View 1 (spheres, rainbow, N blue to C red):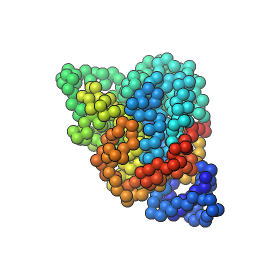
View 2: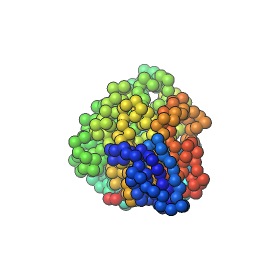
View 3: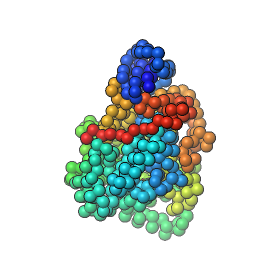
View 4: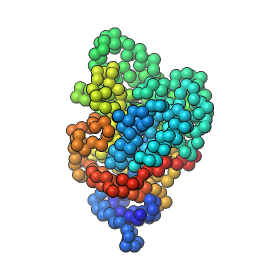
Length: 448
Ligand code: DOR
């Protein structure tokens, strides 16, 4: 129950400093340049040469339970997340059945309480006809409301404008939106079917799910949020054009409209379709190199607020279909932090910025209680990383239930050596500890 992490390079709140962290009963009790042993029953971990980060909080994952558990389960998704340094996740409602009532949401909470190594929350899904259910959300217990303003996996499109306005006016929690304009996508798809029949090349995906489709939808959502005063968070931005809808001029806590960027839109661009094919088919689509660069700049400039994964596994059998039949999405939670640290090695993102966007900001944005920072009195969700311990992603070390990764064959310089969730060391050097057999994550709570 007592752990002392010694000699770590602690990355927190814009600084990196050498120090020790003392944990008791899951809580960070002390952070100081040097802490001496408090008693004999303390587990001491020498972190010499390693960086200590707050555990990542991923605000967008699809863990597929209930109903789609051939792709992933809450247990397998959370396990892969912990191996990837993600200690808390917020899961999406496009399961089967869909999470569109409080009762179904609580069923998922119960599964997570039983099975999840990581801390968890879930979003309720908005539909054209569940406004009364939305009004029942308890803001201190539920992360948010998810709206698909553009259809994606799971057919959860909300397209009735009158209903949308009512949802924006009445949601008791932050609205997180998937923005792609449905009519534009339909029109573009039809034009490509007319030209290519069933054999549309995957390279056309960003032309079908186009920049215009993204911009139309996200600008409408932003307009509606401004008109209604709703708290809007736009998920997975993928284009340079949408960035002018968001601002860096206010501190995050004062923003009413915020935006997220995902690992795949930073890592890949449309030149990768030739080698990766439908394995990098996502909604919204991976777009051009210009978009990729602009997203990275906007993240550094604080126009974009949060880094997430949109972990959305499908089986290889499903993904290996032709363009129209292959589902969009791919597994990411295990490899997001190593990929971000690779950006650090390339001089594109500082460690402080990674921590700000993937740890602190999700906690601030969702008002998550006691997490996301290395601070006294906070829960001990912590990750130790070795920046110089190269490894390569391959089938043998992939933990996703679907058994593949868009990063297969990629070598990362950095390795996650330890993951602590609520003070429990659950993962150590590519292995889960004995504690992982019995410890479970906690339900996230929100100070709202
Ligand atoms: O590519 C995607 N896949 N985007 C989404 O919004 C949903 C996700 C999924 O659930 O497969």
